[in-house]
Length: 389
Ligand SMILES: Cc1cc2nc3c(=O)[nH]c(=O)nc-3n(C[C@H](O)[C@H](O)[C@H](O)COP(=O)(O)OP(=O)(O)OC[C@H]3O[C@@H](n4cnc5c(N)ncnc54)[C@H](O)[C@@H]3O)c2cc1C
Image (tube, rainbow, N blue to C red; front, top):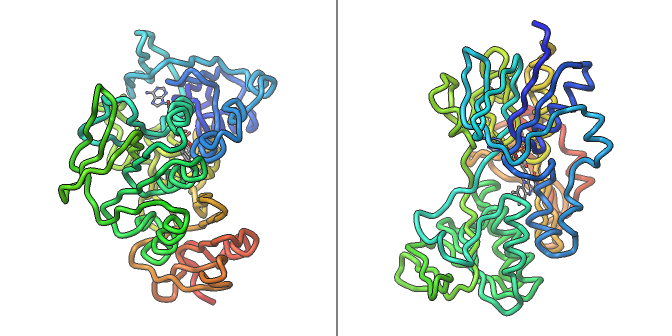
């Protein structure tokens, strides 16, 4: 079927890339971009790094300048939420009551930070996803204040690094024994715990949060399950995120792990999904994965656009992720299942730079570099279940 009317829901990295790929591949029909935020597409990684540190103005995260946006020849409905989808009628319902027909739909609605079941009404309690979130948190990061970060994943760990450099007292709380252990396992987690401790972060690991207390409507403490209360002027809750699929409930689409797609990123005929919201069966892994990484948003946006145009092929990327904490830059290619074993390839943790492979049996699943970007890139092709040579 020739497409004449494509609607993209989610005007961020994945949605923008999908739209650009459609045009590049010759799609000349109507293109409508629907975005819940009022901003044109912008980049999120600097929001927990340069923007939070105050070394970049927020405008610098804009992904495309005006001329590139006008070349796209799209209608932008920003500050507009999609609230429903009729798969049979091929239409999207908007919060303002409008109904938009489509013959091709790209779902790129990303994820929303998970919240604690308590305390978010208190001033000084933050989550971090949007440009506005970053500026609000930045304004609260006043030197000398006590910042408690709940969750030691990459967002929590990056924010701890920025806040220490800004002169706050920082406590990182997590139920697991080390930061980023879910992503990269115990060895890298241990190295990160040492890194943060060396920079003066107080680590409350193997610790649960029982509640947040406040004085005069502002947060004043974080109660731990062992009965202690940590003093807090500012709290960042960084406990993961949930896919934005609420607007797709009862549509018949499978929403097991975000929007469930096939190998080509198709969720249903005429409907594709890309970026943080999309899961797909990775052909080389043979399992369904969903990847919340910046590079994947771009690569999957392109793949999904091609599928919509009838030129799809199985989407088989080597997932790539990076994180910057203090003067440490970590790059990671592939996947890092908990039952893989880490072995150092080059350098050593004591030198402060190394590369490592994650193996199960004779297969490599992921490669990770700690302050060795060039060497890590050279190992990239070995990631993702390549048999060890
Ligand atoms: C602070 C921060 C730092 C990060 N740092 C790194 C990093 O160092 N390395 C890395 O690899 N990745 C990083 N990431 C992850 C990376 O930014 C994401 O993977 C990427 O933004 C995903 O793009 P996306 O377009 O899929 O989703 P998003 O960027 O989340 O965009 C989805 C958009 O859809 C909109 N939307 C949602 N629901 C609706 C609806 N119903 N109607 C209309 N619009 C809707 C949302 O408002 C949002 O604008 C970071 C993320 C954050 C938040």
